[in-house]
Length: 595
Image (cartoon, rainbow, N blue to C red):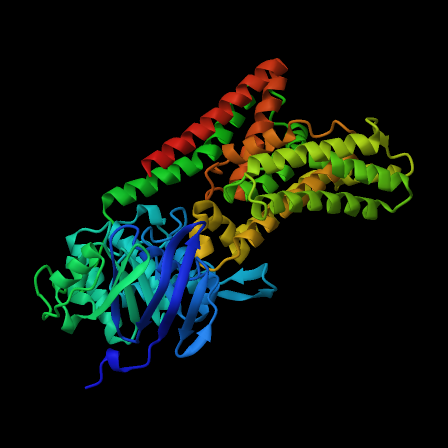
């Protein structure tokens, strides 16, 4: 009867080496694994096990050696390369995005789409992904009452099931599992090993990394022992024993004897069972729902308070004034929400806004049409945003430093171009109508701009694959990278959009003032960041919505307007705003601690 040992290897490694500086992590490693074979990669800490699987999975690039898949030499230099050869990896930390739901975790980087244009505009098929998530979980006999539950609410076994589901759904031919039972209880461990046996029966090759040789001895067909980056030996189960494998791990050299396989320390098989989320998980979800509604409830209470405190607050004209005054900060806040959700920050918004406005003023006074002048300003702002993204993604500068530097550059260029003097629209007086006009004589145009941009941004974040990647980036950048997504491209897009919207805000503000002021936008970035945070965006990344940011911006607008109507000093208004921001950040910290 033919066995896995008789077939052609699915994956072959020859002479694989890897160095980190002067340290040799791997040296001349050979390895073969065949379809339907379970290979245990064992060794002590520092043996090179994790380095080897990261080379196979594309997380690291080998310094030397050859990799073959089904007898054909291939290059695996990125996670996307590995996935093209149906090699899937479940890392020790599972590489999951805790702030996202089950379906986004399973399909990250390989989303099911309805169509699109290029790599950026790809429309998510959320319904199909939800259906497929339910199907694959049922196939693995795993029960999660609500697939919309975020991953951080799941048990260790359920999290493992999500990681395995992702690999199985995409037809893995080689599944690598790094310490698959490290954080699991006895029953959940049994289920994982039962699943490995099922995968073997289905012809899937499995590589297991484990420090617990007692657990893996029963399920593995072959053992590859490493020590200090070198291959100690390879043993098939039928020609070795548990004692010999242990001696090889400890002594770092192959034992001379070949005893029959020992049965001690094995983990009995168990059929995969169902794991349910208990009442504690439901309580967490209810608490999170209340916390998400806190910003909206605060806005309602604030409106009620100021309605009682001033008879002028609830008039139509005053409400339009509140939203109009919020429009510029709101547009900036939309842009910075993209960045904050991706776990970044942008301190250059105000300076970029001023630079865009100055470019518009100079272009208009040079005789260019109004719309061309506006596009010039927006283009320059987008370039500044792209530079932010380049410094963060390519130069790997911390976002705080990168955007602080661009803020100084943009503010300096504004002063150089303007010679520190305002620029008035003497040649293009109609420019002011961009902001000073209104729809039907009632709704100012900036309010419409804000509404349209908010809807468009919300669509991007909820319905496009790039929006899903931005959320994933903020939740777990490593998981996104290991899923084959270009993290650099996502960051460049995110900061470019932020810059573009700063340019749009510059158009609106410049038209409203009918002049380009070199000092425009001072501290606007702080107001925009505050609006996003008050609206529920987490400075740790991974959480936030455009709707929440709009509510946050309105809270700031209502607070300032209401306090003005009640004749409260500007100084005390700043104190009140500071308290609101501190409270919002504190609530986010408390929520994350509970999670």
